[in-house]
Image 1: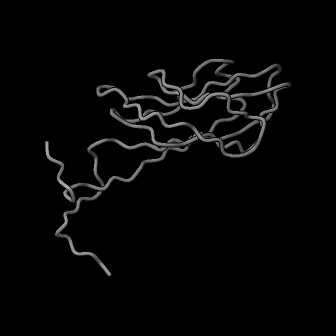
Image 2: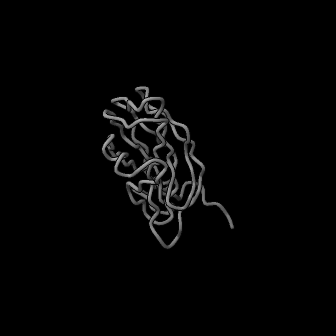
Length: 143
């Protein structure tokens, strides 16, 4: 199969930003996967992470895992007890062709129950063969 250079589409990455707080993770339970958002069939996770904006205050630790419903882990051992953005590792895993893939988090406290904590799960992804724009080499180039 020949590659047609310049006869392609441009696709913009899509981004999901999902909030969660200490009440959400307590309700989910320690070590329980909390599905937060569906991605379309064939989605490929490119990047993302967790942004902690208010620390979780369990007695010894609060750690998070980012994973999907297909069992792929993108990041493990993310501390919820420090502020800031912690990135995930993109695996290039293609979601199921037939069903949506759900992304979410698993929370593991060291001991105690948090009374504070808030953050955002950020997921950047693409869907193969879904172009936002098309161009050819014959298209004029603006100065």
